[in-house]
Amino acid sequence: MQISDSIGDMLTRIRNASSAKHDTVKVPASNMKKAIAQILVDEGYIKSFKVEDDGKQGVIEITLKYGENKAAVITGLRIYTNCEDMPKVMKGLGVAILSTSKGVMTDREARKANVGGEVLAYIW
Image (cartoon, rainbow, N blue to C red; front, side, top):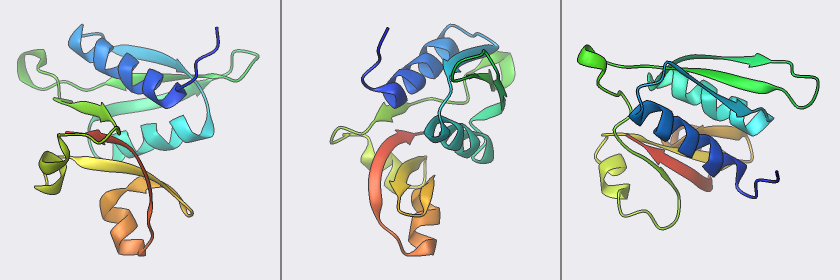
């Protein structure tokens, strides 16, 4: 099975697993997805992730994070397509994940590093 938008697939799997209250979710590994998973850990949206060797490209197992009464920590997650939820991110209610010349980073890190890039997704 070929997936044309692997980042969108990863984020959709996370969103669906979180909605279904799963403890973990697995996605095919890539360096970009590992960087995104690390940002999600650093920003407190997921508990952790680990990369498992499957003899091919590897698999990332993401441990989801919940609040009291198993309330999802991730309340919104959008792949960038002229997202109408940008005001939520601009007001500090979430983060934008960008692909820059210095790697994958949050919008705050990109401003601090004075670099631009392509917005991959918004999460809040």
